[in-house]
Length: 449
Image (spheres, one colour):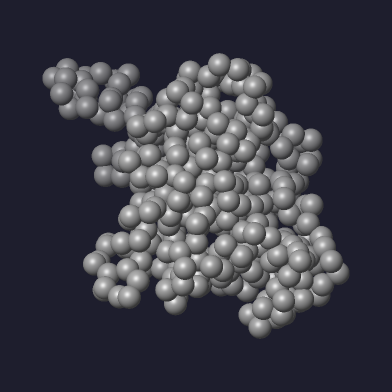
């Protein structure tokens, strides 16, 4: 993994904890949450306050995420919001933490100026030994306060101030006045500078979890489904309409199509479909030839064409089909028949503009593991696990590509691949792309209803 770390593709953008004051605050919060402390004086934390170095020291990388549920967090600075979430057990955890920090940035900035903020992503489930328990997670609520209870004290002080102002006899209540003075010394003037964190609750209907080998759960769509990476038999009888294994490609395709969750890349507005498909072809080709002793360093588009010619016997069907689709999109060639059983099928899709688009792109990344760019962007946990098994030449090529093409403009790359623009009527031509797709669908065998 050294290539990834050196290029900032792994453990990148972590918040550096090195000052004695921050270390002391971190230890105070860690003791508050877990009863543990660290002897380290220099480490790096993610958006949740998890530090890989502390995990190694404690021999417990789930020290802030016991049993993989109800993730706890430690905030030392609002700058942590720029950090990734490492070792995510639920796909929604990062988004929840980021929204919490964005919505409370001013308050958190003030609170972390003097203390650490410790909290937890709370749901009704504390143990997921039974797969059915995943469906008991309906919402997540954030509970947070400083280690000294500043937020709670501020709430208490605000109530006492209201009582003081409303009760006619409060002016003569020496005990009440003394309590207010004491609390004000801890919190400051809560009337001019309110110290309160917004109550935030997040619905947990559609999500991915790392538990049980990896499961995607869709509960809010018209047709509910659970899609599992591991064998589905051990999951038992789940309280959901359908359960699919990743190998059931036609059923997954039908589910995504029926719920309007995907769209063909060649139909997507505001994207260079041909460029995206060509890049996918490159990744597929690299995967096919990487283990054959081919030097992939500094590979250009011309080199890719040469590799495809020289190793034509290794080129898979998915590569050829995407090439036909590019030819159709650019030159009006024959419409390729790519049904859901075809290995290129899911490579031709991206998530439609729905509330579940991030989860769908994550699912598509797992269904198209040779598209290393989408795998890295949408499913980092799987990317790192897959990367470990690649040949050195492929590791070097992928690390170099991601550093050179993705790291320099992450937002731009994401927008180019997954962004959605308002539709415009396409100009008519000798081959009307939109009309063909609407009539036959992008899948052939999977018909539109």
